[in-house]
Length: 157
Image (cartoon, rainbow, N blue to C red; front, side, top):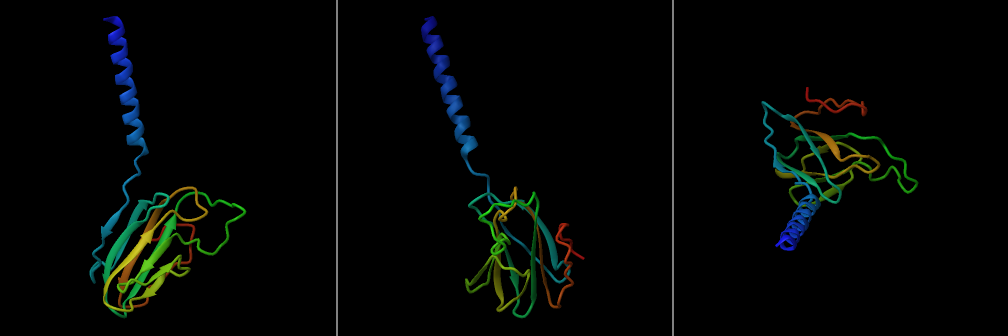
C-alpha cells in the first residue's frame, strides 16, 4: 500500500511538472487591435511588448491625402553586436490598404495613398534588449510637428 501511494505521488508530481512546463512554454499573446482615430482625437499613444518572431498589429482607417504618423519608441538598452547595421533597425512595418508594405521604414510620416484600412506591425526592435514599446499613431489633414528627441517616448499634442 505504501509503495502504491509513493508511486501515485510521483506520477502526480510528474504530471504537474509537465503541465507547468507546457504553460510556461506557450508564447505570450500578441496584440491585434483596431484603433479609432477621429477629428476630435486624431492621435493615440499605444503600448505593448512585442515578442520575438511575432508582430503586434494595429489597424486604423485613413482617407486619401491624410498624413499618418507612426512613431515607435523602444525601451531597453541598445546592443552592439558585430553583425548589426543601421539598416532595418526601425522594428515596424507599414502596410497600405492595397497590401503594399514598407518594411523597416526609416521615416515615421506617411501620406495615405488611398482611403481604407492601414496596418502598423510592430516587432521587437533590432539592437534592443527588450520588446517593450510605445507607439504614437496619428492621422490628420495637416502636416504634424514632429520632435527629433529620440531619447523620450513620443506624446500627442
